[in-house]
Image 1 (spheres, rainbow, N blue to C red):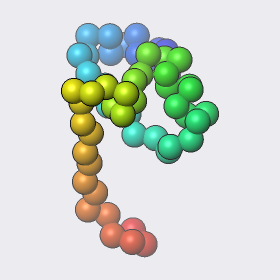
Image 2: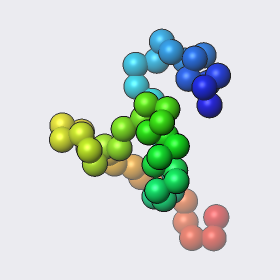
Image 3: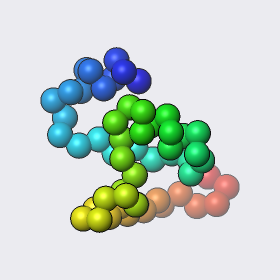
Length: 54
C-alpha cells in the first residue's frame, strides 16, 4: 500500500471503499485516509448496477 501511495503522490484525491470494520478503519487511518463521516464539508455517494447474484 505504501508503494502505491508513493507512486501516485501526485494524485490530489484518493477514494477508497472498504468494509465497515474497526480493523479496516484503523489500518487506513494509519495511512493518512480520513472517513468522510469525520469531515463536515464532505459527502460520499456511490452507485452500483450489479444485480443480486452477479
